[in-house]
Amino acid sequence: MLGLDTERKGLFGQTAAYYGTVEEQGRKTLHLHLLVWIEGCPSPQEIRERLLGDESFRTRFLSWLESCHTGDFFSERGDVLQHKWEEPGPERLVNGRVKKGKPVLLIRDAATTLPRRPPRDMADTEIQQWYASHRLDVDQVIFCSNRHDPEHGHGCMRGEPPDEYCRARFPRELYADTLVDQSSGAVRFKKQDAWINTYHPLLSSALRCNTDVTCLLSGTQVRAIIAYVTDYVTKSSLTTHTFFQTIRTV
Image: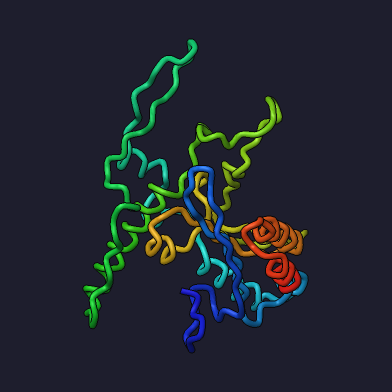
């Protein structure tokens, strides 16, 4: 997927380097944190300057950015799919308050299925049919794995009212199109569904689980993710010389 040690490009372009570390959750499930460096990528400051001053670069950069990840379903809005693929769970009374039960999924959980491989030597019609089924498959993976609970029922809230906030940063801000804020140079990524994170369709289809793909477009983001990864690699499972070498490399 990253195109390492091959002549072809990966999902995000020509990969220059990568670093990943596996974290174990409290439920003993594993998940991966991965940083990918793209060959020839300008610095965040250079990107900002060229986004504001070079229209050709801005058009090409935003097109590449949209090819790296999306924040929406292919077919319809999440609330429309919810009516089709899910029905409300039974309500129950808890301490005098009505609480919603767990929704009932009306489709098979996509995480329990395998993706359909495209047949070899496809005719144009077969390619179109496969791509349509692929888009539906991705929508179902995202629906089953990437949605955040609008009720925030999984312990994601922090702070006290009225200053409570969701530590997963939901709901996300919505934008009709990907654009550049001319006052700051910040990129506002196209987003029409507030309750799913950004993902790459092929990655989600292949891995069949929750994924979160983000481009680091500012120095603040880069520093934050370096600190985040450093926190994980300094856990006791790694030797001292390994994590110091990793910090130095990053």
